Length: 189
Image 1 (cartoon, one colour):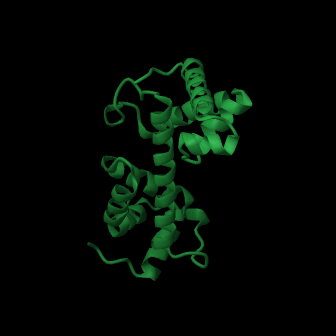
Image 2 (spheres, rainbow, N blue to C red):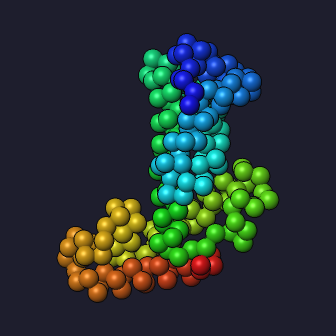
């Protein structure tokens, strides 16, 4: 395992990246890449996605380099904070898709011929569609769905929160998922 880069060297690399220096990005990946990949593999629900996640972390690091302030955080802290947030978001999206029973694209992500930016755009568009549909659900369906997916509650816990029976909550969830599937136009697994 590589040792962390000296703080001054890492800060200099971030400043160079902020100026558009791609070599600085390559050097930063050399310094932190292995650790970020290893971290992602341990945090992600699907450890096989660690390489893609690490690449996304470094793309985000590149795009945020101009806003980096060494007085607020070390480069390592900044990098791993981005990695943590990305992994949390990636896990949450995967859990929502699994819960809703929505299949992925026709091709598995690893075989998707579209460039990363287009895949990302498509994923954001799908998420925006799902958000609009969730917002339009009847209140009790939306509440049950959000408690299940966002709060990660069990059906009995949701029933307690909503003051409803377990069977009633199950029906709310079934109807919410059916509406999402029908309106999103995405295939079922």
